[in-house]
Amino acid sequence: MDDTSAEGPANGPIDVEALKQKYQQEREKRMLANGREQYRVVDAGHAAEFLEDPHAQGIQRDPRTQDVEVLVIGGGFGGMLTAVRLQEAGIDDILIVDRAGDFGGTWYWNRYPGVQCDIESYIYVPLLEEIGKVPSRKYAAGGEILGYAQAIGRRFGLYDKALFETTVTAMVWNDADARWELSTSRGDKIRARFVCISPGPFPWPKLPGIEGIESFKGKSFHTSRWDYDYTGGEPGSDLLDKLGDKTVGVIGTGATGLQCIPVLGRNAKQLYVFQRTPSTVGVRDNQPTDPDFVASLKPGWQRERMDNFNATISGRPVDVDMVNDCWSRALSLLNGLSGDDPETIEKRQIADFQTLEDLRARVDAVIDDPETAKSLKPWYNLMCKRPGFHDEYLPTFNRPNVTLVDTEGNGIDRITENGVVANGREYPLDCLVYATGFEFMSQIDHRMGFDIIGRDGRKLSELWRSGYASLFGLHMHGFPNCFILGNAQQAITPNFTYLHMELSRHIAFIVAQAKARGIRAMEATPAATAAWVDKVMAFGPTRQRLQKDCTPSYINNEGQVTDLDIRNGFYLGGATAYNQMLAEWRADETMPGLEIR
Ligand code: NDP
Image (cartoon, rainbow, N blue to C red; front, side):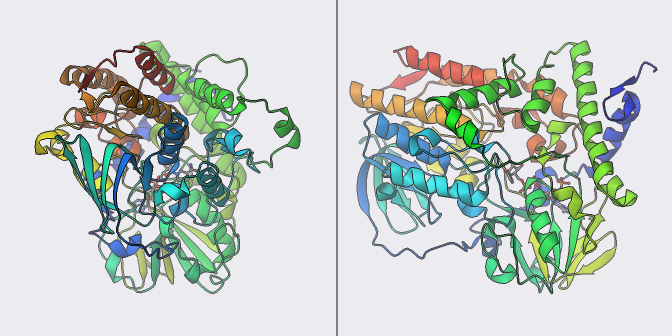
């Protein structure tokens, strides 16, 4: 073994320098000068036909005029948890508004065939103990998760407090009355002392910004608006009985593509999968829930398991890895090597190479055709993209009716009225499915669909034009009594609901304190804001180091990690440290960093 070799568990020695070069070449192939701008975002003003809600109930109601203590925007798990924690803290005067027709957030919209949570459902679905449920499988299907959201809504009386199929269109602070004044798409006029916004990380679908999308004459839709009328079947079923005589194309092989492609492969006459970059595909090993596991659960089990997962993936020493899945095993290994000294950096890189060698070996073991296997191998570090886990995805490419169209990093050339052109060849299609992902962490006015007008008429988009500025990602100077969950400058973990659990508790604490102390308005001070921004920016060099050589994805701002991107990104000190800071803040009765009136 020479200096640049290391042990690879699956394939023997690995050539470190050759791998570095290969990763670099693969990255270069995919780097686009227009970065995020390569996409065409679908929103109310653009390609809005892709946004139509196939599940809408067509709710009829009169406009409301209402004054509430707290308005929650967003009925996903973040918004629901906030409402639940507020109620527990004695705040009942709550209204929840969501453009969807029900609770569930991402699980309301994403009902594509095969949809499943790729985080263990025992730690992902919140409030399981409170609703007295344990999911039926380690990784529950999307429909089951939607059912839990509805169960939470019923158990905590949230349906009586919800306005569905309703979009907030304006939000203006009235300083004299210390109230937010909101308008909605249904003509509601709502005044609220506090507003909690939980927009979700992926509010809008995106499409490739390539020529010809509008010219396609066949059927097309985005995975988050699956058209079962066209494909046949229904959410949760494996049978898409109208596709047996159809040629179907899918663009996108990320986490969503991995889940819907196996079902499409089983049902379509012919399936073409257009791939720009292969995902990593680790073992899923989904299992039905063991009754003995359920019988063993003691009160407080869910929080303990969530904390354990979070500690494990952060690389902290734990007695036992309770979840023990691909996430926890891979991330405990990599994040256990998080030092900034050259030796640890190199060790981590080698561990990452070895992890990927195993995943590439899995491709060879599963795929019959060597050329297809070659195309399905990923060449980048594990966390450059969201890691994928699936047991039916790779075998799908052994089916005679499924063809992988490897565009070798180029993406498709264009769309015509007949189908997709890739590698210079046209593939005629009856149906084209866009599994092309979502806008991620864009400017808040675009994510929300309206700007927030704070004290002195100041727009939040203007405040944040040169970069986000907040305390804990939660409070903004000039925007009193407004909280944003799941925001930039907050911690990040693959288990989003873990953070929502903590943030919702924190918000409920603050609102209850405000009520108890007669506080009319509170907002972050400029000094506390500057200090928090500095804390976020302090992780810039680490992020640059981890992501600068990455193949592009939404996680690394399409391969261009700038200072602005770091500032508009997450607090990278870890969820445990972040939660600890929030707990210490709550323990300090002076509400440090907030200007209180
Ligand atoms: P992604 O952004 O991860 O993937 C989009 C896909 O579209 C990529 O494969 C991308 O290729 C491809 N693509 C984009 N433009 C083109 C083009 N011009 N030509 C060819 N291919 C193109 O979106 P997903 O919807 O898959 O996932 C988004 C996120 O949603 C996940 O990362 C995850 O956080 C969440 N999610 C979570 C799930 C869960 O179980 N918890 C399940 C599903 C999604 P390239 O890689 O080259 O950019």
